[in-house]
Length: 157
Image 1 (spheres, helix red, strand yellow):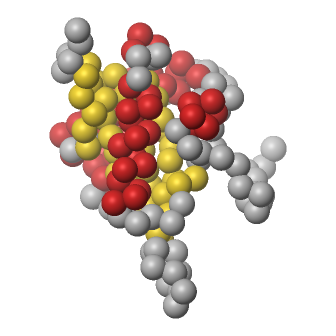
Image 2 (cartoon, helix red, strand yellow; image 1 turned 60 degrees about the vertical axis):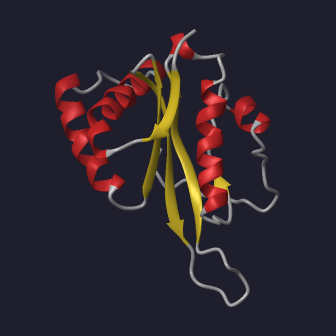
């Protein structure tokens, strides 16, 4: 039986998170050649350390002491309202489990940690733009499409 642990990531976990991020994006594919691994991990590690001290909350999954998944939650402040107690919503992103650890409950466990955090900290809503592959898991974990959400992509085509 494997020892599976889900925990809040710490600053010292940043290099492992950066390596998983690279693996995630390379697995998904992209245009062109990926950035040099060492360079990317170094730059991403610094980015993560800065953000982890701010609005980002990250959970790391480990099996037998080896990092094998993560989920990121960015707190997005809301303008105060005299009618609402919630001061933030959460943007769920960078949800990844290594292929060899998929379909064993690890992904659900990661999402459950992020959702538990959101409830404990009284976040208004969790939002996510799921991939086709991840959408069924999000739905099983209680995510659903709102009728009122609109978006306007602003990246030039």
